[in-house]
Each structure stands twice: as structure tokens, then as C-alpha cells.
Length: 272
Image (cartoon, rainbow, N blue to C red; front, top):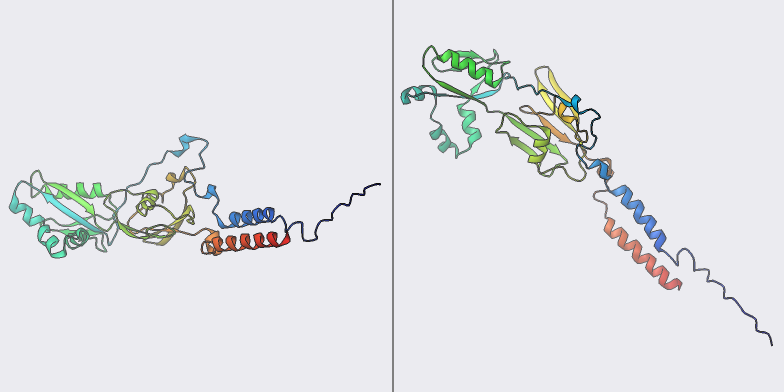
């Protein structure tokens, strides 16, 4: 007696849906590729220059402009002379609640439309177009006619910048230094967000109008740009990546993945 082997036919339900995992992997890969910013777009200074010698750059010192506010203090060995040239900052600080920016603003000298500041005793001094160091030297030379061995300290009061866009802590920042770069400004905001474009914009107000410059932070030669070092009242704006503009940052990926995986598992269970 011969036995005939009967091969069981596969259920029509078996097939692609019976093994949903390849489909899930493909779907997961698709969403991941379009929902995440590429790693190369998150790195700073990644494009190394071919010739390092070409990166030599001399930063220009800031030149005083109209409407700037300067804090000028004259130091002498005579207390009465000090009181003539220097206002009582201690009283102003107590009145303003130790707000240093307010004190410097109240005690500062505004650069007028003719580019001068009006100092006690010596009168008007031309400072427009000069660096802080040059203005300090000019004031000291004028004081030599009245004082012997006087020392002058000049500070720029209105040195503030604004950082907006895809940064962790946007806002206005007062700078207590003579120099600050775009990288320093971003560091003050505790870095860009994951969706921040590393090609940032710097908006600078000049006498001729606003100037907008793009600064590519992915390029190692970025510090050769004349806009790399910021000036008073500069605006640094970080645009979002295209992924965020398309709404992927708020898309509920976790819920979608959970729903899809649960559905495919149920299909696989009932198919078997």
C-alpha cells in the first residue's frame, strides 16, 4: 500500500502580513530619516581648510559711533579733583538697586550728533571714529593741561547683543568685554537646539542701514569673516532646519510607532 504525501497549502493570509517585521523596519527607517537632523548638520567647524596659513585674520577694533554711551572715569591722587570729574556712583547704585547697567547709563556720556562727548572742565572731546584705546589717549592728553599724572578709563556702556531663534536661551545679553564672537554668543545661550541651523545670520546696524551676513559655523575658517566678532546692538538669528519648518518636531512619532507595531502584531496573531 502506497502512502501519498499531501503537502499542506499555505494559508492565503500567510505572507507579508504574517511577517510584519520587515515592513515595520522599513517604516521606522523612513520616519527616522525624515524626522531627525543629519549628524553632519549638527557639527561645528567640520570643514577643515586645505591651507591653514590662509586663516590669518586681524580683527578690527570697534570704532565709536554716534549715540554710543561711554563711561569715563578719571583717577587722580586728589579726592576733591576726583569728585569734580567723577560722579558719585555709589549713591546712584544704591538708588538703582545695584543695577550696574542702569548706573553706567546714568553716569555715561552720550556721543552726540557731532561725534563728541562733553566732559567736565575740558569740555567737548571728539571721539567718533576712534577706538576705545584712542579715545582714552586723547582724553588723557587734554587732561594734561589741568592735571598731572591722571589716569583715564573709558568703557563702552551700550555693548549688548540679541540672540534669537533656535537657541536654548534666547534674549538680550550685556557684554562686559571688549570682544565677543558669534561662538561666544551662542555659548551664552547654552548652545543651539537640535533643530538649529548652523548657518546663522548676523544683522548689524550701520550709519547707512542694516547689513545682514550669513555665518557658516560648520566652516573652520568662519573666524576670518568680519562679522565673526560682534559689535554693539548686533542681532544673531538662528533659523530652524527645514525638518522643524515641516512640523516634524511636534509630530507624535512615539504614538504612531506604538499604534503601527500593535496593529501589525494583532494582524500577525490572527493570521496564524
